[in-house]
Image 1 (tube, rainbow, N blue to C red):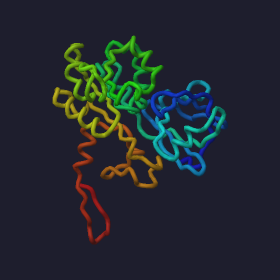
Image 2 (tube, rainbow, N blue to C red; image 1 turned 90 degrees about the vertical axis):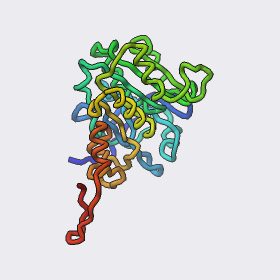
Image 3 (cartoon, rainbow, N blue to C red; image 1 turned 90 degrees about the horizontal axis):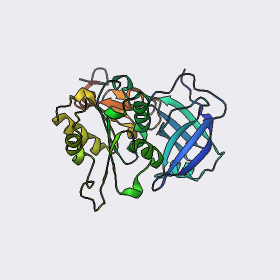
Image 4 (cartoon, one colour; image 1 turned 180 degrees about the vertical axis):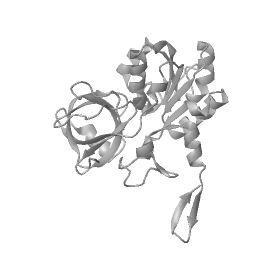
Length: 282
């Protein structure tokens, strides 16, 4: 049954985590998650008078239902959430969408490429890989404008000693770290003597597409490359149509998409049938 009425959650902890970003811990007030949240799913937060928007689980709910999200101050809703203090109550709906292909990662060499706040939807995946003993097979390339713009500082400190991490910056004097994540993929893989069997990427859409093209050129099959398109979503439940992608809704069939599937959807054409008055994708 579709749950339209927001449930209540409260802020139990928060701290500054990068420029105009907060690391926020929430807990349910009057409900429990009936089914486990899957890594890569999203949820909706709402504040009366400020609207609602999708966010990702930076960490999944624990035994008490507490979970973490990264809140970046970019619009009316996020500014409202950013101003809330410990104990404040918000509206919550979720979990929604399809997650990352976690079941495919257990015995694979995994490359994770993140840009800016795009590291947040991938954080629980990295923690999972470490937990199941695959840290030595995981490579993270994380790009940001500069060091102050980096987020998830505590998580990254924990990962630094367990997985291979390479930071890149658009503004830096360090030539070895200058540029976009895509520009460093070949060198990082060559230096570490690794060839990824699966790639997960999240960040600005132009960056993700560049990552996908580069990895495909490096002979990584397009069905082993996954992108997150959650910025397209608005209502989160398939009603508003804002996230239509060909004949699919990103909030329902996504937000994570296999690269070959994404290309297939984008290459579909729309044909209007005047007798039925309907559009058909073909």
